[in-house]
Length: 300
Length: 326
Image 1 (cartoon, chains in turn yellow, red):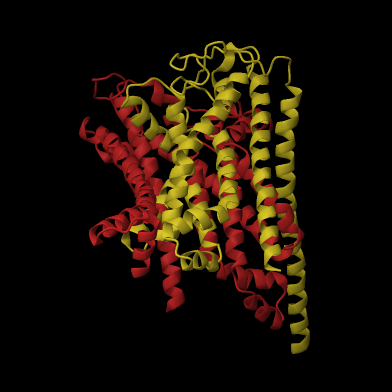
Image 2 (cartoon, rainbow over the protein chains, first blue to last red):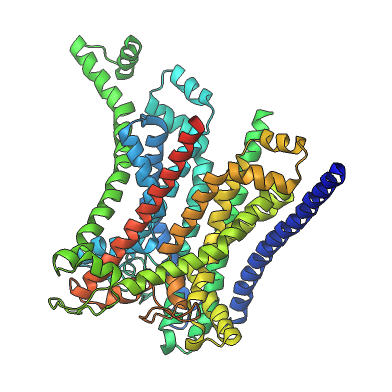
């Protein structure tokens, strides 16, 4: 009697196990299908919306916005990479466990979880309202660099901490100071990992829009024949309004009715943006793989 | 120390008086150590300054509603009378942001309801059920999910989700709804929760599982009774991080929520939320006026919510660490 009861219990447990395995497979499959469908939808819809002149550098094309996007991300990296890498070095090598270090960690964590629109408003307040400037690329770049600062700092710190202790010991034993050890030995050794982190941060910067709404501005006017850096229509002037690709989608889909091609432009911009971001994350992924292989190789 | 002195002497070449030597050594140490250390320390401290500056500026600007225009905090949080005067000096309107706050809470709650079970299921699938090929397939998939910019999610919501909600449910307002915002947010926070939950599950020691299997458990019993309870803290952290992301998302929600200033009557009716209102109106309101200040108060509220989530995560982690010690 007892034995049959036991058997039914075991049978039931096995049946539940089979059902739950099925459920998990369904969730996993749904997840993979969803991402494939999403990515395919964006890219195919973008390609179908192609029309001659979509890349043109005028109001009918997205050339100017694409240039602004790349220029803005470049400017933001020029600001955030040195500060982020050096702060990461401090956290990995010099920071002593204590109140200040703990406070820096809390700050990094808070910065990385701040909503991007809040960072954008801070940028609007400090770089636009307080300086009395118009919308400009530099303000946008500063806002984006605030967003990418925590991830660059954390990547650098992790990269430095993951180096073998013998690197540092060997260099110090030869009489180098701590700082010289960092610059000549530790930093070159973890450079690939830092670059990977920077590439990922750049990819995220391309898609940023909420932080740029009130910093970089929602319009752009570039005169490609004008190379006077102080002129507001010069392409390389960082103090001119510079709408990016991500913002362009927002503008085209919310108030872009003036442009007859607005829907097509939005579709195509979305595809270009996603391809750009994916290309960057793919590069970072390949680099990470290379680094791991190299490390495994050197151990063997 | 004597080692360094000798080094400093040779580097400087000339060995003069003791005073000269000491000076040369100081210069050497400054160039080779203290300068670099000073700069990186400054960068570390800069992060604190930046964070504090963001907080302070938002607090100064965001409390204007209460100090300059003398509205009560209770009115801001609980009243639904939103009629601030939009001029540089005028005042006397209402600044009740309850509609926006409820809109944010509803959309995020709905997103969590959709995303959390699926995300935890996906995390279990990629770590426990198919750890070999699951991981290889899922890691890039998650990266693509994270990589798609939020504006593009909003754009998909606008071109796919909104029309289909209109057609399937015959919703008024053409499909702009709490439901659409909830689904868009769910897709956006899905990868965050999955990544953190999968890390937590992976860090459960293997002998837990082996012990349970040894006692004759099925795989589901191991997952449900051993692995999930053991990784509870990490999974909760993931859920909170996802919630924080949902609260802060602006443009994707703004594109599908409909932006009507009224409490939603069902999940198919449109409403508005904090981020969408800020994104839409901040640039159009007179700087320093009542409407403008009320929007800054909403930004301050977003900042405080984000800080609250961070504190919550620390509280949960500390409590579980204390429980482990006891």
